[in-house]
Image 1 (cartoon, one colour):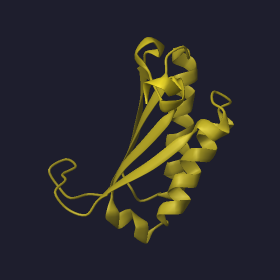
Image 2: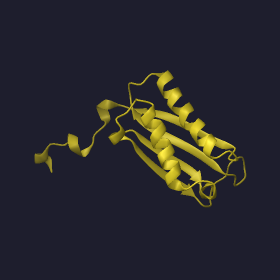
Image 3: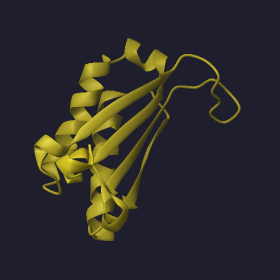
Image 4: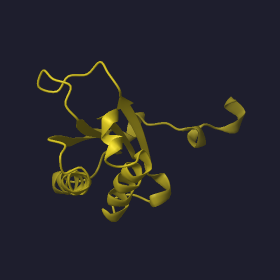
Length: 120
């Protein structure tokens, strides 16, 4: 955690490479000082067909962030604003670029390091 999942139209990669996009989101998340860099995960889901934006197949980028609860609304808003600002500078002709931040509860979060070795 945190997880940043980017849904986008595949044709935007004619403008920027996928790795540039992944690094941009990673760098802005890291620059936020909200997370340890080693914990930041960024993934990409490009769509080549079967999507509509305003009833058309227009280029789009939407970042879904899932982060551990405990950050202020202002911190989350700044995170969204900075990532969208960075993507906007990279994809000037893409009219739909957005992001939202979802909190997940510490009480229900689990990863493999939290499982005792004797449980398999």
